[in-house]
Image 1 (spheres, rainbow, N blue to C red):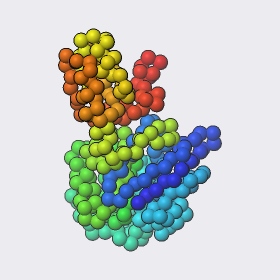
Image 2 (cartoon, rainbow, N blue to C red):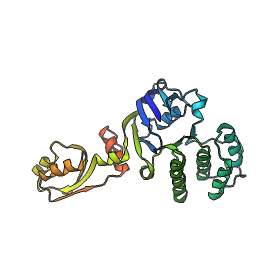
Image 3 (cartoon, rainbow, N blue to C red):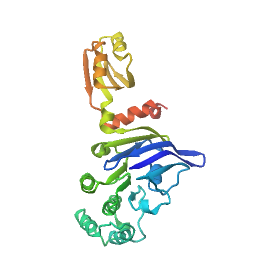
Image 4 (cartoon, one colour):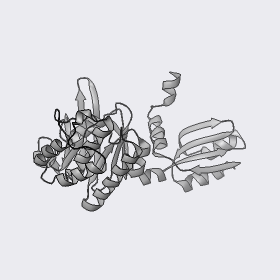
Length: 301
């Protein structure tokens, strides 16, 4: 398990991470999402021990990670800003990581590179962005570590490669208990693979919850009311997060159980009433609007 206990990190007068506490359970896919500048990359760099928190502590399996080489042997970090040795080939990078990670499977790495169409003797500097990302992911998978920390993992990958990477990650979780932490702005991608979601905004955690539970406790309702009075009756006592109205059609995001919302709306005798499933993207928008991060501010000023 990875534990972050009241983490704070400042850069001069900017607080990048502010009193963050999170737990990442083993053998689950933890998705880290957030608004621009929320502190996701800084947080991941503290998780892998590149950056020291100003206060608080990051522990991996009850051991502090910073300045602890033994713990770092259990972690592989795929940065959004990838680094390879100058003029190196994938084969040479495999030789390098074999020296660092005792469980590195070089034979499998070459086999996977061949499957993805990557020339292991070609200079990585001549690869496209997506091909470089593939090399990083395959190095991380073949390192054999318990934890794989990925910053914008799927950025630059085509749909076929993305699906292939997902399949490999799923197999690694089943076969050896791999625990991936994946930070991404592609919420539709995360929704397919994540068990747990952590949402950051302005350096703090808005929520950290199992994705299934998150969807159960938030509902999107589309409805038409006979009158404004009926609308007030239906919404009385409910926690409305987002309420849009186009003509007579209301689209309302409400925090609460489905049964609670159904009972409340009966009071308003709606002409039309339907509860729709929420996507992770819709949950993200609803939760961040509650804390003032609203698209209308960008459009209307």
